[in-house]
Image (tube, each protein chain N blue to C red):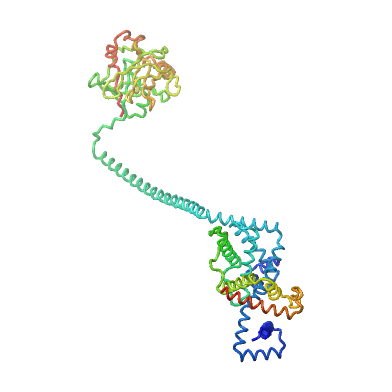
Length: 372
Length: 188
């Protein structure tokens, strides 16, 4: 086939594919294609490339359009859009980075809150049940108390009272008159059923006493022996010191902190008592509960005070009611009985004596107070 | 209320797809503008320039457009994800060609194999045709480009290329066409 003929055929195919044929030529060519498979193949070959070229053409046109769109985009607008996109993206990255942490934190918080609420509710319910248990117990206790009281009543009705009421308090007192007046601490004998005094230095001595005077404010009490077996004391050797006492002065006590008389010595460590109480001294003598009401003597055997108490939590800090205060209280409260109460020598008969001798003479006028 | 409705109508996914299928230039322009920052960010973050971003984005946009031109094509994800995924693949290919680096820092969710087999085949054939065109040499390349891609008439081409008449130019075009076909066959 000559080149020219081949060209003519190719041109015909191209015009056929492009649709640039007259109707008569088109119909004739269609007939030819149908009868000539070689021609049909040639057309297919042409089409294979032509489709690609057409696609390229379309693409090129579309790309030109895109370039137009691109050119229309304002560069500033584009920058803003990019920044907005970036920020949105940063947020997304931030979230993806920290979301697990945030989630864990949130769930921990949630669990804490819930468990706290739960525990509180749970505790409250426990408390409620305990309260009801408590009430129940108390009711049972009340029932038991009632039962015991009933039993007691029955017993006291049927049986004569044989037992002695238990002893409540123990303390010390000392004689201030031959007729049987004694001084002690009011707190020992307050609200007492009955009070007895005993002495270990005079075995078998036991007198029943009554409260003659009491002052809760200063913790001072005057007792009077009311026992029929009592006649009178011997002459009392010690005196009551009315003058002021110096700081650091040597003092001693004799008292019944246990079931035996105990000697203690120390000095005046302050002119005021507990919380600046001017009616008391502070003394540096180890005292025990039984010391209450015991006398404090100076080195010459003059009574300078009455032990009233000690400071809890501090050793060697005790307080004593001043003898001058005792004198003034009684003078103000019971002026008519003052002479009867105080039947002491004007001057101590123990002056200048050895301590052991002093104690031997004093001990018989110091008693154990037993309160029932 | 009316503006809001119009807005949603203008920016809905279906309306975008419809516009791309029916060549609605105004809407296509809007879509183009909408997703360019995303691809720009992707390319710039992965050591590319703004021009490269434009190239990549347009390639992806063409894939989307051409795919939607095919009546059998079904878009399996959002336009945005499609554009990002294609852009991502194309940029990755370029990076590999540049031998710069092969790992890519993503800024969006993507679908690994977003382009279907038909569009990949078409693409391969078109790339081959374009390459063959480049190797064709003058005057063939200009004649074929002007006629088949630029829709110039043979008379204009004859005049432009200095042929005495359109028939001579046509004969030349025929020869060039055959040479192109031969080159493509050699390349296969």
